[in-house]
Length: 397
Image (cartoon, rainbow, N blue to C red; front, side):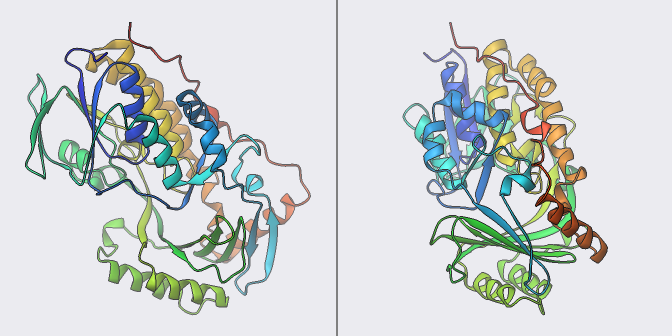
């Protein structure tokens, strides 16, 4: 049963958006999700689901299906600048994950599971986007790019790190973007390396090239390089981005890097961005709120983007279900979730970026630690992954 006067528009149909839609529907809200892409995006680079986020997907009933999609990488091999092996370890020994409890799935598989859980209960508008928001106090008038106009009681931006919802409400991204000093490119490429369910990472100071074999045939490339200066200096055009990546890796000592750069040139699914975080003093204004990367992107260096998106969606929906009044709900959402967000964003300052050393000395120190891991007991799970205990969800009466 839909609560009277509780119609919510969510912008974004990746992770946070469908998860929020699921829980809001459970709480009796009428939900519309708008997504600029013409269809659900499949495939994509693997993502991690750990700790608190595992409990979210368990409560949604999609955990068994996600276990079926679990990639289960068997080893992570590090190479030196010339391509020689430094160390080969289990991925959990490096990430602080818990074998048998944490999930690693394609981003598209997670998105598809979330969509399937809610597609029959909420409205999805693909191939459209919010053009204008007018929060007049009693509701939010929305004009879409397609020309359609509607009024909603609440609007939530779940539209990623480069959120248009956030920009229209709070101002330019640079006010909230914390640049972490890296640029990266992700793409698929032919598996001519003979890898299977494993990751191979090459490093030189300030550069990293990783091959991520999801199965026997599917292979993802990852090129990451240190680049000082503001993120605003990074080129916007795909051609210039490809040139920037190729220039950064010119003359790499391992021939596999050159093969990856050539594949990057031809890839039709290249994703290029900077490593950064979104840090905001508030995640809502009036009748509009933000969730997931739009509000608190932690960056890929933490491995917690999907985890924060899932936990944030649950906490926002539960606050609205518990309190009804959006003003009190938004305050509670921020109060209860912000410590968890802060702990996970702080992972970049507590060693999460050590996989990508920027100096020769730092690289030598990292390689020494990796070799030590071969003989030391497995590292304990990172407390930040499970630092939030979910409340029981408040169902409508």
